[in-house]
Amino acid sequence: MITFDNVSKRYPGGHQALNQVSFGLEDGEMAFLTGRSGAGKSTLLKLLMVMEKPSQGQIVVDGKNLGRLPHQQIPYYRRRIGVVFQDHQLLFDRSVFENVALPLQIEGYPKHEADRRVRAALDKVGLLKKEKMNPLMLSGGEQQRIGIARAVVNRPRILLADEPTGNLDPELAAEIMHLFEQFNQVGVSMLIASHDLSLITRLQHRILTLDQGELVQDAWQSALPTRQEPHQRSQE
Amino acid sequence: MNKPKRTAGAAQHRITARGAMQSAWQTHWRTARESLARLLRTPGATAMTVAVIGIALLLPSGLLLSMDNLRTLSGSLGGVSQISLYLEDEVSQVEAEALSAQLLTRDDIELARYVSPEEGAADFVRYSGLGDILRALEENPLPGVIVLTPAMLDSPAAAALQQELAAQPGVDSVQIDLEWVDRLQRILTLTERASTGLLLILSLAVLFITGNTIRLAIEGRRAEIVVVKLVGGTDSDVALPFLYCGALYGLSGGLAAWVLLMLGLLTLQGPANELLRLYGSDLVIAGPGAGSTILLIAGGTLLGWAGAFISVKQHLAAIEPR
Picture 1 (cartoon, chains in turn purple, orange):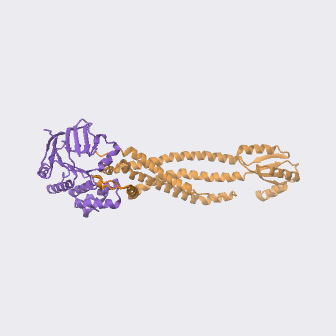
Picture 2 (cartoon, helix red, strand yellow):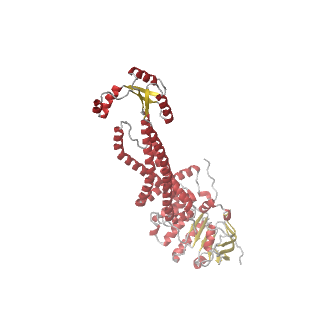
Picture 3 (cartoon, one colour):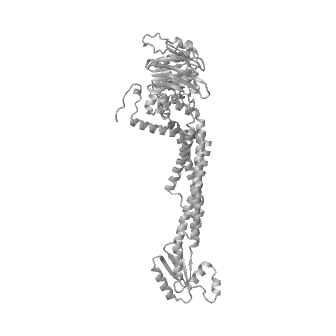
């Protein structure tokens, strides 16, 4: 579903954010991306969102080579990918419902269909009763869940999350991760950037570790018997 | 309509051609409503922008409307423009009437009327109020006159006619009431051209006013633009609300200009018609017709939209999620 092939990213200032990173994520796989601040997690996700272009190497997502994606195709590519942002990226001039409905509005869903889906997504994250409220009135955890509802509302095949539990207490963080696992169980491929090692090692999924822009570890934590053999790329 | 294929992943995205059209309509309708609501949320600022656009559109449209009225007026004046043929003293009434009848047979003359010196004197006494002076004279000093109404008015032809008439036997002199009409026409043409120039300049002003207002709106909604782009909004998705805003500014500005124009007209119509009546004209001041009204409002809308379009082209592309 996602293939990184010798991808490097050097920012105009000369900062080498990613260095020769290669890995693959299978369809329906769930993996964590970890590493210290500045290790390149966000850059990697930005490359997947085509917010940045790689300086070297190629990234293929769902059969599309992102380096060759024409500018006007980028929005349509983004619609196939759900993204949960650390800072939520919510709009505070509209209700919870309208925030979640945004991707469907953009895609041009008929209103009744969109309404149904928004409610389903809000129900999934447990915010159905707060749909009319302004996100500002909700807690950080709830805001994060609005962001998640928005990311999954058009049922993407890939879900990316950048530090989705960054500002949450451990209990809420575990809850959010559990939510992600549920999406993964219905076939959504997931890549979650998180530096919360204690949490993610407990969750028994593949962990990609970045250090100073290099992929230093690609370890499979699975104890789940239903999983196929991990897709392993030797980096050691 | 063929049924869309259900493929993995895209399975849930059932968007038929008809559905797409319906939803495009929904999107436009929703965007228009939201844009209007957004403008109404800041009534003071919106009113200010609309007023500026309205005034900018009022000036040239008011001038052009005045031109239209003056042109109608000068046309009607041209229609009644007269040629007076002053006859020599020796010409008798019978000869004069024969000449008048002969002139009437010409194609370029519509009306010919002989006014004898006696009639002329009577008229003079009646209209000038200076009858005493005339009565004090021993002889009637007025010559016989043939008053002609020519068929056409363009000045070279009229000049040729004048020469021809002056050469007629028994004609002393020919006076044409044409020059001031001719001058008025020229002044009108000049003013009209200046108004068109003003129209162009002020249209540009409207373009810049909306463009700048929209630029500020874009700055104010930067966060929203970023989010919309992040969740897959195309450049046109992002631009649409701003284009509607611009068009709404232009539309309201056009309407404001129309209302101001009508107010001005109502104020001036009474005295102007009175003045026209005093000059013996049965013309009345005309307002902008349906066509001009539509043109003014549609033109305003188009200018507002275009201003927004330019602004969007310049500033929106620069806002990308980082």
